[in-house]
Length: 271
Ligand code: 2HA
Ligand code: ZN
Image 1 (spheres, protein in one colour):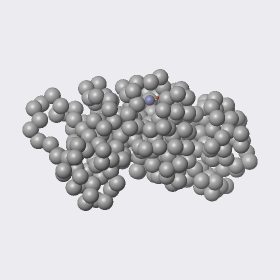
Image 2 (tube, rainbow, N blue to C red; image 1 turned 180 degrees about the horizontal axis):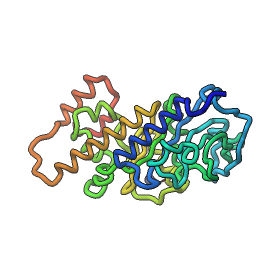
Image 3 (tube, protein in one colour; image 1 turned 180 degrees about the vertical axis):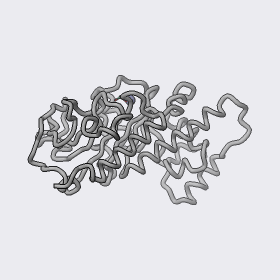
């Protein structure tokens, strides 16, 4: 067996979480990430027959039985993941009956997966149903995205439209737009179900007055989605209290989307 510190998936998790922390998106224990791993990706590093302990999931994850995930730990700080992955992360397999997580590595201090696991696993299911290559679900609290929530109507058409107008590349990066949920109690199956429902249509979902979820095939894709929303939100927050004398017109947004050949939410434009 090779040492897991050489595993690409672990190094991706360490570097993205460190990056997110430095950007101020994951204060204290804020944020969580889940990464769907392939059997053969872990085969060099872990014995799939060697289960350290079983942790009840608290919801029915039968649709993902047998699947293996690398997930940030409950109450853990993104700040600490890179220097101490084994205490702050865990790798587990969903049991055959979908009721428990079979721990294969990590959560070494006796911890467990993030309290937002329902939203993560339900979102994986929803995204896999529309994109079989989806691997990552990422949640964080980016500063300007959160600030925007307090001064902008929480409507997905209007919010997406505002973000698209803030940077030329937005409609190309997230042509599918941003889903929006109202403020809801976090850590529950209910917010998990609501997030997953949105994830059937969107790779990005804003949790009102809380943060954002992103999903996609790779860490770079998902980080890039959230980074682009955050940049657009920053431009909005830097300009929203000033007279607006310029904008990207809807005809220009359409021209961009058509020129880059992306399938965009036409109903989010007023043309
Ligand atoms: O895990 O971000 O939504 C900390 C959170 C909860
Ligand atoms: Zn959160």
